[in-house]
Length: 450
Ligand code: SF4
Ligand code: SF4
Image (cartoon, rainbow, N blue to C red):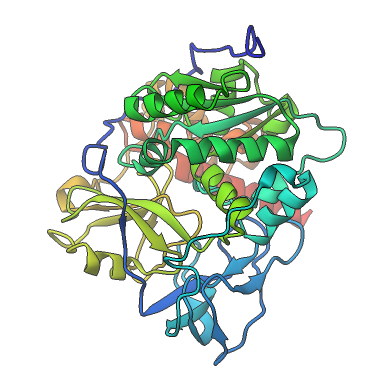
């Protein structure tokens, strides 16, 4: 048996927390489509690395799925039009990344060349690894769990690095988010095919899907599909303890393989590559249908949303357009977050568009948000027990507060995975992860100035 003695760890990882899941708002709600917007704001930067270079001009007509900006360098990604229409301009617009990101603005008009058409399915098994990789790269696929790292780069480990396992991240440990759960419930066969494609690209014969136990339907549907497709010799499914941040790459590898990614290292240093289930789904579409990444599934949720649910939406659609379509909010939002409440980014505008890395949009009212000032550290140690990276978050935050850069560096701030567990448990409401981010930026500027 390929997996005998191979999957380890089930005890999980050290630290972590159990925040209220609050998934009930959108859990089990089938996907609905958000209408195609009148105007799309498509950022050139929707991925880690260099922004893409525009290859269209103002006034030009574009087709649905047409390349509008090409990857600029090794770590970058192609960007495609999510609608047919005319380029109204290439100018700055607020996005989740910055208040001023260059966007290709497209006014929708003309014929839809891809929507509602039956796609030509290719027999991917006859394609070489290089051909598969080139389709993934052409389609502009990036990590859809939120990190938005270009997938073709992640699937191309440098010479000397051997990969033996693909880990498929179906943990979805962030509260409120349910989009990955619904993808696994709805498309188990497609996800397994995407896994097989990715295994071929990586040249591995083992994949492990990790799903938190709070998603029993997703687990049952995928298990059934594994058996039905006779894939249990190469694809295993492990039901994981429900604990945040179970879906963080290093924690998932520790929980499933018992391997520790070294400080400053990457999953490939322990022979693993991790891909989110949403990315796996997009890889399949890129390879089988040559479909560029111009739409994705997201969760829209929170206590003040009229119609929380799971939606399919074109990239570049503004949050305000989505709200108009789903009945809006019950009150003025006090906080809007793109992503989950633990790792997501707070937004200051509803004009911000959905991008490749958007897993969800959450809306909170006044009574759901704390605005109290934070207090000094009382040395209670809760943040230390919660930290899955084995850091001293209290000392890190104090070192940043006091500008003690040498002490900060010694505390390994770059090992922080920005999970926010420390901030969540702190009785003094100290914004610890925010301090650490600030400290990382300070150390980066210091080393650049040397
Ligand atoms: S220090 Fe970083 S890794 Fe540790 S709990 Fe805080 S945010 Fe998470
Ligand atoms: S949880 Fe907050 S108060 Fe307690 S040790 Fe950490 S920083 Fe200090």
